[in-house]
Length: 235
Image (cartoon, rainbow, N blue to C red; front, side, top):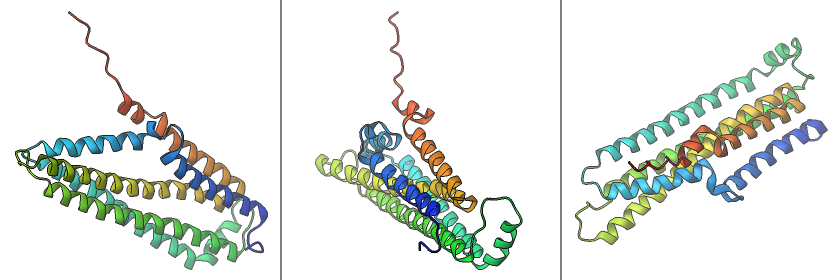
């Protein structure tokens, strides 16, 4: 590996992997993680399922579950297209290297190094596909649990709440895997910087990391979820 990748490439790749891993851990378990957009939305997923259990007609809930499934299916299909396009780049290595050699896009690269970079991109898109596909399946399970939730007037209120909470936890798990698939897409954008050089790779990784963190903690969406309307003045 060291013969194929120079020290700057190894440093950039290590920074990329560390950034992904640290972000993954801190977003779920770090200080202040509960203020993140994902954690806040998980609370609303639970509230959604509890509200669903109190409804006699659950057409709206079924429609929402279908929309979530369609989103997962769309991204899973997109991942397959990305895998196919990346595999095409692997087959057209000679042609691509010839084009790169004629453009001022950073230092030249060997065939072996180029193939290593492409394989890494394939791994990222493959990971994204499995996350989206599993998310689709979990949303399907969540829909089944919604359908299995006893009606509002059921005499066994404890069982109704129990199944509703199971549906909520399944919904949260599906959303978690969907988020990880999208995160892979974002980091794939950062990974493209490696094709322009290791230092560009580090910069694109840092930029993507900042954008994802900002969306979780200081974005308009996060502020909307945390919004507290002003109290209506007395008249």
